[in-house]
Amino acid sequence: RRPSPRRLLPGTAGAGAWPSCCRMPSRKATAFSPRGPAGLRGLLVVGLLRGAAGRPLEMPPRSGQTCEEAARRAQLDVLLHNSTVRLGTKNPCWRTPKGDVCLPYAYLLAPQKSGTTETYHRVALHARVLDVEPKEPMFWSWKVFKENSERMNVFQYHKRNSRALHLPQSIVFDGSADTIYEHVGDCTSAAFIKKYQPDAKFVAVLRDPVERTHSDYWFFSPPRFQSQAPCFDPRPSYFHAAMQKELRGIDDCLANSTSAEHCAYSKRFNQIGQQMCPLNRKTAGRPLLSVYELYLRSYFRHFPRENIFVARLEDFDADRKGFMKRLFEFLELPPIPESDTAMWRRIADPHHMRTGKAFDSAKPKHPKLQESTREMLRDWFSPHNRRLEELVGWKEQGGTSPMWGY
Image (tube, rainbow, N blue to C red; front, side):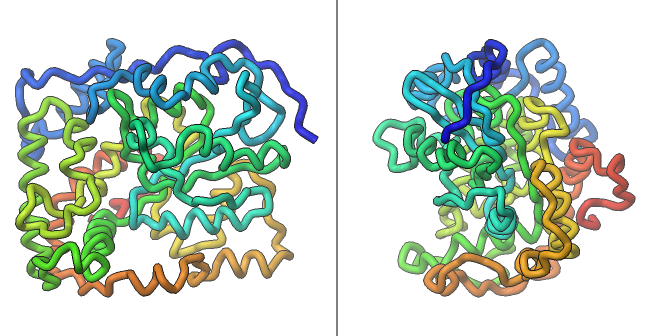
């Protein structure tokens, strides 16, 4: 039986106004140095001051579309804009003129190679979490808002989540790795989710930026894509040169833009495939995706802090059981009994991964990171990590040393 509807106040199920988000800051303002005394901190102060005036520096734009135009093209408002009835399910489901529809209860906020598969499948082990496919629907992606896209459209996305209609105490968890950094037209994913799901929850699992950058580079590089990149050189020195080139490009972008978000959401710096012939391309690798503060700031701007679970992947590796207990509590799921030793054994098993043999064999066996490269990347990421610690309240949570020791 489907749950009976319960009335919501007008605007709480998608009928509210668009969050203030969507203006591209002028490029005529004074440039700044990302490494100087004012640095990115000065930029963010300017951004927050503009936000206080009603125009936070949200990022944009591949297409120049407004939030409303992008939503209209993707038919989001057809399903949710006029919905004022939410069904009595734990997972967010609404009754609309087109039928009953559902969105996920929570979203993963972590770019590729941050333990996204580990996190998703361990959350899905809980009896109240629906393990639905695909793990990464990548719905809040600009391709969904593009005509003739091969990505999941709005009707398919709701169909994926609709099992929650029949299991009112269960939830759906979206494990997409691009939710943290995607944007559509003039709106980030955070702004879209805020519009349609203002009480959404988010799980941000963050890996050491240096390790994530190195892993990301090799995962999306040969030998996995050898036929596409005959020019690729697997030597560690090549990766070092590629990172030097990319970091210079990012610093130049930051120094010549009035908003760091111009660079953070630029296709130039976060597109998969930049590793193919990195020294022959405009960009090489994706280290900017490891500057988590730039992307999380949009979510902290739109959602209350208590709706965002932030933890390091290293915390999970150190204590899988304790980590998952805290995460289940955040998701308001019933605790798993200590007597269920079989379940806890599966949760704590470091080899519990649902990847097939074909996928595993495609993973490149990348060389170790050179110490000189590690030091270069640590030096570059260090000031960005300080801003991340300030954003998430690292010291308030008891952190007495840098998040990743540098």
